Length: 119
Image (cartoon, rainbow, N blue to C red; front, side):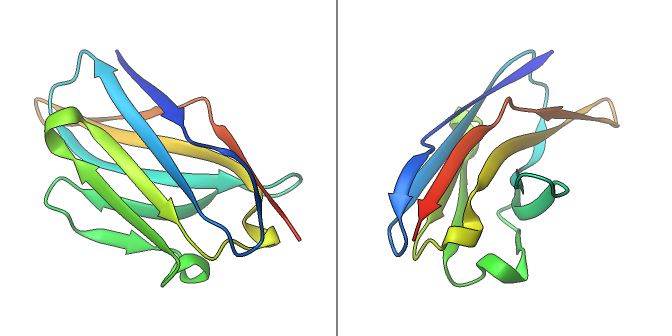
């Protein structure tokens, strides 16, 4: 099993910044990719950004130019630097990790961390 522990959420004013962290631990074999999703009240969970172990990144259009995802492979930790935050960024942010074990992909999710952006 792999455990994901998120940190860094909180309350910030519009235009401000936050940095989320997510550390993977446990029976990790080979992390293939990590990323962040978010879910606002009454809405579906949507992709924010992902990063592969080879540093290939993918962003939702709504966060391009404002958010930056990075990963420390040695620490199995992914970060999300969020700048120029908007009230519409308010959501619970979930970390996800893909662990490949003998060619089989296992997906793990964190518990989520609340990000609230006030106007």
